[in-house]
Length: 329
Image (tube, rainbow, N blue to C red; front, side, top):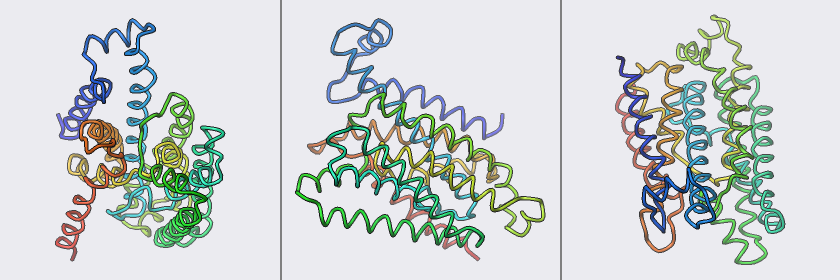
């Protein structure tokens, strides 16, 4: 059996362990028997409400968002041929964050719970469209620079909202949302992002064949009949739909899309198209594990998910930069 299938099988086995652990863990720990009754013999008990209305949608969101980040990171690293690429590279995450911040700033989120996710999704699509318009026709470097410009614009808008926040409570709410979390999410958020995650994921998967050709360089890919404009469009709008919807619900969660592809790449012989599936599975595992860890590590308030992934991902980022510097010609 190949290392690829062994690695994917190990990830799936860990997911089978982590999913029930996610349902058991929390401020109030549940016993396995209580969990079994809550899932298969539902009733009016408090434990049933905790499992089915709080922890189960939270676990599903962690799996969906982590898988999306892992897949999009693998695709973007292949399309841009940049080992440091991740979903925030194209400005989509910042656009989603800005849209949600606008909803919070103007008080729309106080009157309608879905205002922040919906405006976040609009912001992600707008950022993706702007990046494509600015970077279209100029190759991969132009697309990356356009994404950096759109990210800077979105970050400036967020900073402006924090600077002009009408009161400390609004500023605190914006800051808390930007830190990223899956706490207090419900099935409503799952249903909101599911169609966008599925459609965006399908667009990203359609780039698989072209990723292998792009590994040879853009000129070689064109000579093999690859339409680079189409591939950029699929990668950009796939990321905008999937990652934008996820960011609109969870806030900003970094580094999963960067780390997951690199950890599985040695298992598949560094072939870009074969990285997609294991990176998707590992992204789901990493984010679910991180969400469990935020409930187990206590410093007072619950540690925010985006903060935890940054604390774990930053050392990996430094190691990757040092490694690339040593192996560069």
